[in-house]
Image (cartoon, rainbow, N blue to C red; front, side, top):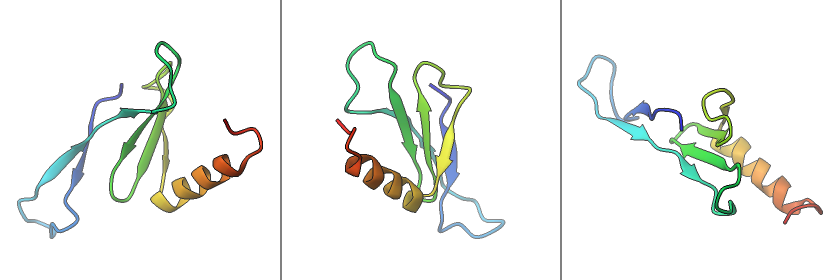
Amino acid sequence: MPASEWQKSSYCQEGEACLHVASTWQKSSHCAQGEACVHISAAPETIHLTESADPTQAILSATPTAFSALLRALKASPNHG
C-alpha cells in the first residue's frame, strides 16, 4: 500500500506548532481473500481510493460529497452485487 499521508489538524493556525495524523489504507469489506481489492484512505476533506494490484500508480482522490454520490450511484446500479 502507499505510505500514509500526513494530514494537518483543521484547528491549526498558520505558523503554529500543529498536530498531524496519518491516514491509513483500509481494504474493502467486499474483497475476498487473494483478490485485487479496492483500498480507501479517508481524511476530513479528501477520500483516496487505490487498487491493491497497483497501489502506488493509480490513486483517485475525491471530496467526501463526491465519494458519497459515487457510492449512491453504485448501490443504485442494476449490476451492483
